[in-house]
Image (cartoon, rainbow, N blue to C red; front, side, top):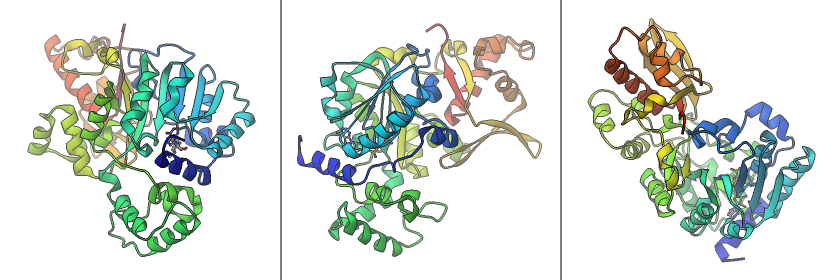
Length: 409
Ligand SMILES: C[S@@+](CC[C@H](N)C(=O)[O-])C[C@H]1O[C@@H](n2cnc3c(N)ncnc32)[C@H](O)[C@@H]1O
């Protein structure tokens, strides 16, 4: 093993596989739907220009007990390689491989730092909840970048500093008490949790401890959250720097709603924040909302920069808008809203009747300019139409209600 930290991390996941293993991947997908990094779910976000090939080569780096198997099951045309340090977690994944006859899933025990030894490249790399456990996360992302195809896309999840403030306070107490990732450490942690006051940062806005800390999900979640030997979190500017240092580009959040200024602000404050560059807006919103304990995002190689979704030129007229799954139009007290359940509550966006006319025509096939050629918009001057569409689309993109693909990329 390369170093003592990596060895400590491996040992933890040998003793406490995470996430808690699942028995039946098919049942799981039926109950919960695909993972948000699954290419069948997030395809348009991973490749707004269109999927590079049907038979994607997917790497699940730090696959844990089930992630690679869930993706392999849901994407039978694709080949999935799952790598992990933990033999115990790989054994759980292998159980799912056998149970569901997943001939498209290959599992390997290795560090993602050594992924170059596979001598392969991948169209999609998924690494969620892993890089922040490496002694040198920068080296981890670079190793993954080296095996990403030039047209590929990566889905990453890193812990968020603001939303995990309470976790680090409690981790600090447990470290001082000598509690480690073992049965005695778990006992001490559960005793301590009894004394955590209801106003502590660890307690969620619903007044409850995070799910992973409740007894009924076993001990692995508690160990992962409170007794981890190596764990760090990221603010938004730190994520941007992390991506840049690896020679990659940030290509979007899994759900913009978590960083959406319109959701929390209005009037002068909203105007001031919307005048900032996008990454600054997201940094401000992360600090203001303080709820984001995990940042889920996508990164790509600089060669794919031309496919990024942007609204500062008229190119956006060629985009094909797609209403995000779960978003619905509703009438409330004579007004219209778009609404969707997200991780921190409902995302509610008021919209006008004419904005609704545009959204109703977003069928995942028509481009924005095709929508604007509809008879209802024809009475308006072309310039007026473009201005109107840019404002609606940009606002709906910020709230995450609309996703966009590119035409003829
Ligand atoms: C919190 S779990 C996440 C599992 C999975 N990605 C998911 O989201 O369900 C972290 C996993 O990363 C693995 N891991 C940590 N460091 C690693 C490394 N250097 N190389 C490969 N796997 C690693 C651990 O063994 C563990 O299974």
